[in-house]
Length: 358
Image (cartoon, rainbow, N blue to C red; front, side, top):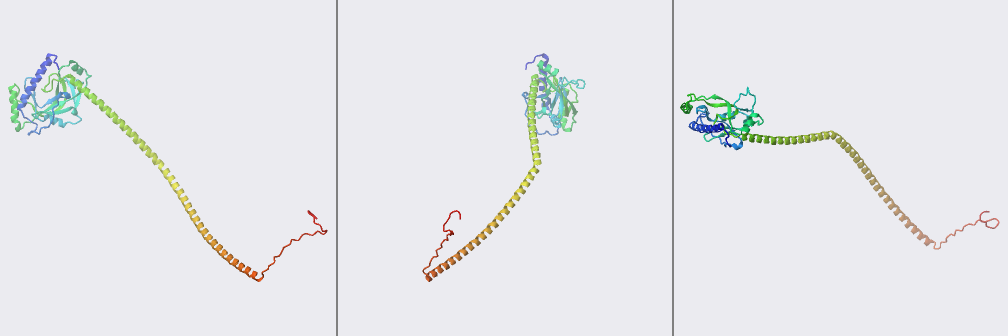
């Protein structure tokens, strides 16, 4: 982006000088938060296209006169990062204003908005992608001005206790600081507590400057888009849950109705079973009675057939006897006169027959 004012150009030049001097000093040092250097993590560097800014870097932090302001040992930032959880929230302000007296905060950041990047020397840079309120006047002015800005972290630090194994490295810092007009007592730490950061023009940390205001706009738009998508997803999931609950309630209600109707159904089934049982018993009894009757009729029929056969046999015997008798009679009296039956006529005493009366 083009630099529009002389002060902005001067700050950018100073930042570039800070970076070079910091790199030169850090290259001589190997102070670590541990007596033995830990295994280096494989962390990819993040470019500015992802919207991150450098909040703080391990190694030296210099004043404008090149003396040492503070030295952060290797592993200090990772130690702090690992110590916080999802409940952490850092503030964002402008110009290092005292928030106790000036209650306006331009934004915030959480652990999920931070990222650690390890360089080739084993030192960490702590990156931040904050959430800022672009409607506040300070942020509007920063965007409208459209010139590079920087961020400056605010934190508590605790002096490192120098061990015998640290003497050689620490002596290098003392020599450097005295050569540049500084004090023999060089502040050094391996434990910090970050509370927030401020938007500033010229940063204390060399890598924390030269950012375009459009970066903040892009970050916030990205955040709002993600939030909108998340809200839609949550709404969709809530609708699905509501539908599932409604279906569940309907199923439960149906099961309850079924449970209520079940005894009646069972009672009807019992009645049907009783009726069917009675009908079946009656049918069996009827069949048994008919079977008995049929057997009786068969027996009676057999008896009648026997009697008929006996009668026929008896009649045959009689017929034979009559035939024999007739034969004998014919032999005994060959001429048989048949008696002629004469009808006796009524006789009128006057000798005449009258019709219809006497």
